[in-house]
Length: 273
Image (cartoon, rainbow, N blue to C red; front, side, top):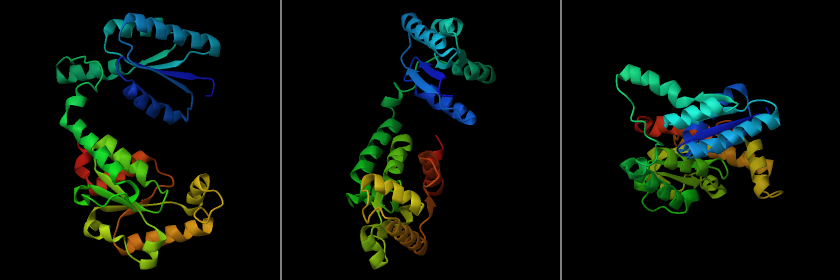
């Protein structure tokens, strides 16, 4: 759908609308043009975004798709009535049935991040992000006893983005350490990890894919050669298997899938909010 535009319109950041909308669009293999319009909390702003939506409908010759998370009734009604688009009202779809089920009215709070910034969970996430950055790629062995999980695997197998996702989304203190040829020669994990082996979780990757990724960084090098990638991956998997470290392949998995698997195995309590 290269000529189809999807708008995500919200009186908050728009992250909720975009995340939910993308999940739905993924069911159709759709990759339309995305436009996020946050903080649409007045009629004047709503008029501007409706003008943009209608202009898009004219230029593309088909109506856009619009996901909205708008609490203000007047703003919401204006967009629904004036936009020449398929408007999917996410709050109305879910809030009204829940009000009936719970027997109470919702508080109609705009956005979800204002109060979050004052919560203990938010401060825990910030602390976890700082921890993960300080312990990225084996930079530091200090305070590893505070780690919730320590990711191990060969270079470029996805350890850093997974660590940061765990910290940002779940407040998990995740360190990560690369397994390097010296570890394979010694046939042992890095010595600083041995006291914390129960916290370790391994990531592996298909050698062909690893070679492609490394060639983008250091083209034509031994580091990126397919032969070396096969060697490192095989040795890393052998080492993790010998030491009883659970591991999975990041080749065909999203960061979200990897993180959820790690939480299920290492910190299942973090899957409960």
